[in-house]
Structures are given as structure tokens and as C-alpha cells.
Figure (cartoon, rainbow, N blue to C red):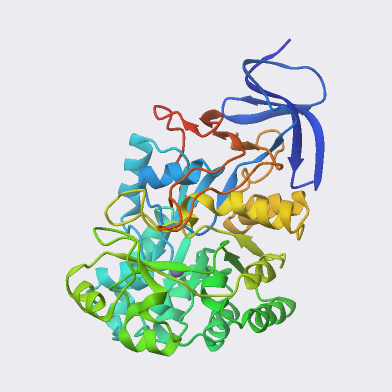
Length: 456
Ligand SMILES: [Zn+2]
């Protein structure tokens, strides 16, 4: 009898490709799925799943972990086995070095990287004012850098247009054309000049229409979850019906987090969105937990470059409205706190995926379990071009999560209400490339099987 590296027995196996959940056993060998069977099989390590769900590890298509170990662990305990960094126009630019360092040191989960335009590439070519246009020469330089990083294995190009209002359409299209030429994905944090600025979403559609590139609209609820979601989804529905290759993602919260010095918190912008200082609270550093006041705002804009601010906004029902569309996948938008302290920042960093299953499957019954799993596995894998992830066939990567649909829930909360880094319940095992890395919320810190994956 064949003895496998790892066998998971007595499982409810959820296969998103075949849209089926069935009782069985699963074997992993050399980091890959080796067999799924109803027969009794043996392993050097055996896990009794106790009739819990076994499915492909979750893929988080929109995050900002970028090699930060502590925040990688907060993703891991949610069941995320692959995260995608470099979103919203930021993140590392020298990907050769990034991949090499990550793979030398190891990481709990797998990582893919975008190359960011609005902070990273613009900064590289000497643009330090987000309100100015890039010159023709600077666009040319950005194209060269981007081309190099595509060759180095970036999964795509990311825009954070709200953070760089000076980005001209010409600049955006020139880079997007290059992405299309290299068959790379483009993620777009839209320009959003006002809370109901649907033109910014039409711009994302246009980018895909003109260049033919595959476009992923980032954190849809943080952009359009303030009363215009129905119209926003209508724009995407229509574009998709016309053959535009456009997708989107959303988290499970309406309140977003971003840096205090970004253009999102320019006085003009705050006014346009109608936010009061009491809607904005400080989520990192010495002043964490406090609401902004005009005095604190002025002081922090000048001195406290990196503080994370959480903006209380949005309509909860619009989260569900968005995530019910087949083309909208789940994402966390996890972003490390500038101080590196995991007890800071947004509860999304540790709660998004468990909260999704708790709210949308168990409590509200908006989604069937297999459809919910598909949104966290197969669909993002297909968008990203990951042929060996997000599915359970023999030969696919041994990235797996075992969870209990009856108890899975987020425990993380906003500062003042709880801990943003509290581990979720109900995620029993997380397996990355065949290695058990988390077991009932305990991380095996000496096992770092995650790979930084070059996409070529
Ligand atoms: Zn963003």
C-alpha cells in the first residue's frame, strides 16, 4: 500500500471545479495533491478532518503584504494560502530581488506581485507630487521599468489612481497597452473624485476596452459602497455583456483604511466626501484609537507621515450586493501598519475570509457553500492565471484549508471594540505546498513553505 506524505481523512471535500462537496480522503505527496478517494489510504502524517470542509487554500487577490511576515501570518490563520501584493499602485519594484529574498528566507504563504504605478513607478521616475502629469520622457521611462519587471515575473500592473490624481489618461493607457501586450493583469483602484463618481469606473472599463487587457477593479465596496453600488454593478454588467474582460473584488467591510498623508485625506477630498473628523480614527502609532480633530489632523499631516486612518463609511448591504455577482471575488486589502505592530490597523487583516463564510453562507444564506468557496479559490486562480491553484485535481499544488462551516467566524474588530489581530474561529488546518503551517490557530513558525511565484 502506498504511504503518502500527508493524508486527510474523513473530510467533506469541496471541489470548486466540479461544483461538488462529497465525503472522502485526500492524499498529498511532494507538495502536490496526489489522490482523492473514498478508499482507506495511509500517510506518514494523518489528519482526521472530523467531517469538516477540505477545499483549496484561499487566494487573496488584493492585499499589500509585500513580504511582511507578521501580516502574512494574519492571512494564513484565515485560510489564505496565496496573497497578491503590490496593489493600489504601491509595493516593491525590484522584483528579482524581492523574489530571491522571499524564497531564500521563506514565508508562511505564497505570494504574487503586481508592479505599482501610482506610488512606485511614478516615484522611480522622479515624480513626487501626485497632482502633476508625467512627461512623455517619464512615461517612456516607466514603460521600460515595467517591461523589465514583467520579465522578472510580475503578475501585472496596479494603479492607485485616487492617490495620483495627476495621472493623465495618456499615461494610464500607455502603460496599460504594455500590460496587454505582455498578457498581464491590470488591477485598478479607481480615480474616484467624489463618492458617486461612476466616471472613474467607466474609465476602468475603457482601459480594458481600448487595450484589451484583463482588468480587475479593486475593493469595489471601498470605492462605490456609499449608495451607488447598483449603478456601479450595472456598468460592469453591461461592459461584460459587451465582451469586456473586467472583474472586481471586495472585502467584507465598508470602512476602509489608508495613510493620512495620501491625497485621499487632502482637505478638499474630505470635504467632497462629506466625512467629519469624528468619522476618521487613528488606527496606528501612539495616538491609535483616537478620533481625528482638526488640530490632530493638521499636526499629523505635517509630522506623522505614516499613520493609518480608518474612515467609517458605507452601506453594509452593498457588500453583499457586490459579492453576489459571479465576477466579484473576495479580497482582504490587508495592509501592514507602518509601525509593524499587528495589534493595529484594520480587522480585515485577520477576519475577512472567515467573516465572509459566517455572514454570507451561514447567517444570511446568500451563497451556497460551494459557490462561496469558488469565489475564494477557483475564480481568483483563473483571473490570475494560476493553473495549479484554486482546484483539487491530482497534480495541483497542496494548498489546502480545513474549516468548520458551523463555527467559522472572524474575531478581529476595530480598535475600541476589540483587537484587529484576533485570530478567527473554525479554521482548523492550513496547508501550504503540502506542509501543515497552522493547526487550530497555532502557527508553526519554523515551517515557511510559501513561494514567491514568478508569473511568466
Ligand atoms: Zn486601494
